[in-house]
Length: 388
Ligand code: PHB
Image (spheres, rainbow, N blue to C red):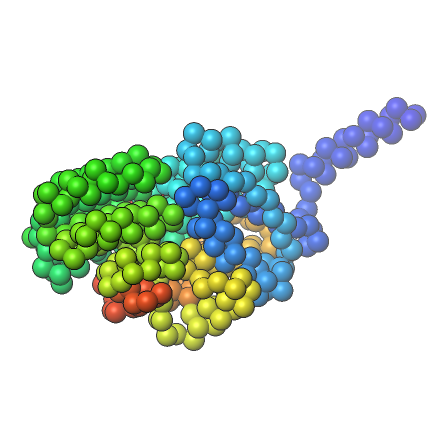
């Protein structure tokens, strides 16, 4: 008798585990997979801050559900990415993964998310493939594609700045390479030419030999993708080498976002393009900035905005699904149709789930990347290779 009860209860437990109804008191499990160490550590922290701030503004719940957070430091290391993402998917059994910063790591995450069906919201990494050939119904991006700010800068450099012969210098990995490709497309469409492409391995910061090569070649301008601690050192080294006086340095806004305190004099006057800027002047942005400064005693940057908007996108989906993320169609369709009221300005998502957004032209003035106009309005990534 006891034996029979035991086996019945085992069956009941197994059934409960496979088809348990979602209870409002169950927490939604959110897994942050971000860099908390290395050159991109500050970016990972800003993303988490932004995400948590939105949750706080909603009284700690999204779509009626409390949130339980899990964390993995991905170290911006693609070699560890599959193991790291599987810690969240298989060990912690998270409902949503929020990550990451580095494009190489993000591609491994997208593959795992596609295979497991776990919702993935990318709050930075621009890897074109994530909303290109790897696009999927459960993968969303709250940030940008590497192509977007880069293409806009190509147009600005050739048309507005009138610089035609440009050298590029970046880290040799997906983000740097795709950024250079996007820039080249915008530049060459407008009569300019990339005369030489220089690279160094990620996250190397030994720039001297490359700066010497630039000085000798005397191009009209240089375009570079660097970010985080690497961007701080690069902009300072470029200035210290005396190059900024004669060969202007351009880049996507990552070169000067969240870095100006450390770059100081070296960054003054630099022009960059990005989907966020300081002093946008909207009520939405002002409220965001005041709250961020109050919460974290820091000025927000583009990474904080992207984390905040990842939480907004999750909320839109959860609300439509009645708090039940397993209602995949309702969750996905609501995000696809939404207009996200971002501090950057409103944006919608493309068919491939990448933001369609204004790209600002910004000029460094003191500790701010001041908005000096829109470089390209409502720019959509071409989503080459996405079939969805
Ligand atoms: C990327 O690897 O896609 C990446 C990293 C840092 C940035 C932007 C893009 O600031």
